[in-house]
Amino acid sequence: MDIQVQSFAVSNLRRRPVVVETGGFVAGFTPDTDNPYLNYATPLPGTEPTEQDVAALIGIFRERGLRPRLEFSPQAAPGVTPVLRAAGFGTEAVHEYLVCTPGTLILPESADSSRVERPSTDEEYAELDATLAEAFGGVFAPSAQGAARLRRTQQSGGAVRFVRDPQGGMAGGASCSPSAEDTAELFGVGTRPAYRGRGIAAAVTGALTEAMFAQGTGSVWLEYSGEGSRRVYERVGYRPQGIRLYLSLPPAQQS
Image (cartoon, rainbow, N blue to C red; front, side, top):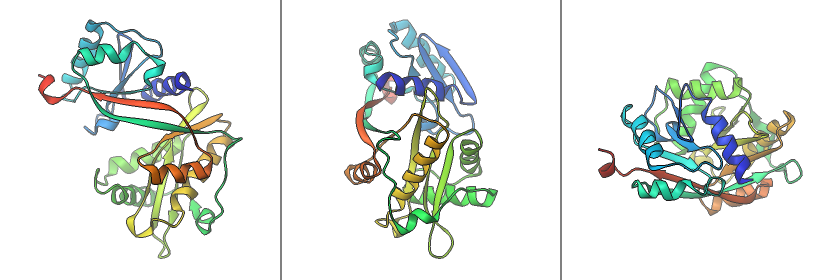
């Protein structure tokens, strides 16, 4: 699964508005934001980069005023991490990823499951962007660009879903990327604080996963942020499969 997830990461980055490939790396950039999660690189599976390859990659980020940063499955490219470490890259995070297949999917039985909807209007995409901004504690601000990215995800073959709150607003939602390499990434599962613990995350996760399987995708994977969220995903049928490594160059090493 590591090779498949890493191959997906490469294909997914190649969908970015700006793509640069060098020395066995693919770097994807989103010009309307400096968000590090939307501007990063990943290696091709099995690549064995040289010091010069890494130096060239660093230069690609520096010329854009961005922090050099990578996300990847280390087991899919064992020769990458030692060379990055030698260049000064440090660990941002190590995330376990979980995978669901049609044979493991368990659709939740809750009142919220029947209230899962797909946004269709500009207003709904904007409201969902604002809902997720609140859900993630202001890590990002709601914006027209964020709403547009949600719409593009849905229109390009992915899926976006939300659950309404009792007043008709939005309680939470999530997205799933378009598939590549017969898998897709589910991400951005968020619930507003006032509505947590009501099965909303499980409802949107189940609905999104089912929607991707209906399109013929062979598996869906995700990363989780804590044991609480892991239990939610495991109840829907997600199972541990591997790890993803996040490396970046510390500020002192960037000049």
